[in-house]
Image 1 (spheres, helix red, strand yellow):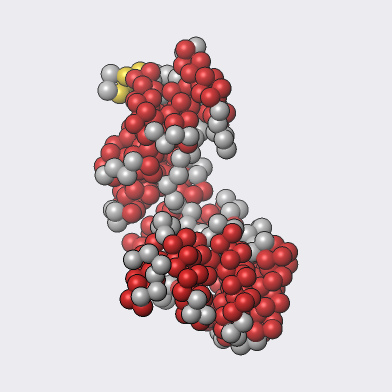
Image 2 (image 1 turned 60 degrees about the horizontal axis):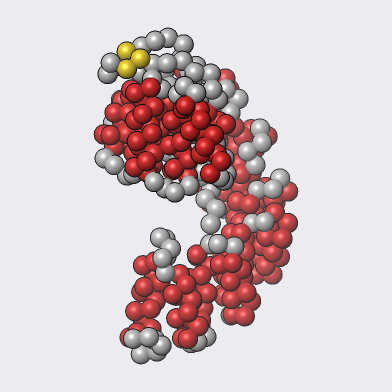
Length: 382
């Protein structure tokens, strides 16, 4: 299901063009300049021809070839050991990018102790690699080492990275330095003209003790929306709904969000009608509209819940199964539960609980469902 607040500082495999032009020694390795745009190695799908092309880069002396081959193995065969091998070769050949990619491999794919990723990120960061600086900030933030996080986020932000400036604001906030947090968000919003800065200011004035000002909060959310971050319409509606209990204005702003294509606002509009106002006809209308017109899958899921609430289990199954078919296992589990709990159709409940097995977020719940069926003595396989 959609999340209201998007987490910006997640660790992902990101690649950039190197611009280092000096020769620096580190571990007796000379850093080599390259103008090859590593973005050329990023693809949705790869073929064996791509691998040959990347290998030919290495043969021609282009050091980014090592990173391209490493990325290839991560994204195709998930052969992390091979990827590690090529990134280490890239380091020996003088690629700063290889330090960064090795750190990303350790933190995002091989799940090694964070000290391994930090070690590689730091080597790249000391050579001016902005994303390595950012990821160091993330690593230290996650360990609650806020002074170190501030140090590296600041370096990255000064290099022009807006995500790091936002991370810096979050770090000050977690550290309890709310005035610096506010100043950082203002800089992101006003100087960098980033809607995320206005969004964070909106949250800041909604939540933080001593600074709570709902009027300011709504003003900043509106600026955020006007800069193109349409989920901020939903945030305005949320202030009206949750903080002021003004459901009429909440409805108005959620509808503005729908008109701008915000799935989040449309989801909240449907929930306002179903959970707060108990107007099931409007809940059905807006959830259907959200799914049909802006492909809001969470609207389809909530539609299943509405039909379940009004005891229309045929339609509840229809919409939960649609969510399942779209690849969301929440729909799978809910289908099983409707069969088990309401229809007492244990055969189909068993089928759908088994379909829900193997999905990380629902595996335990599916196992509990099968355990209940076992206690009832209705499992086809004991």
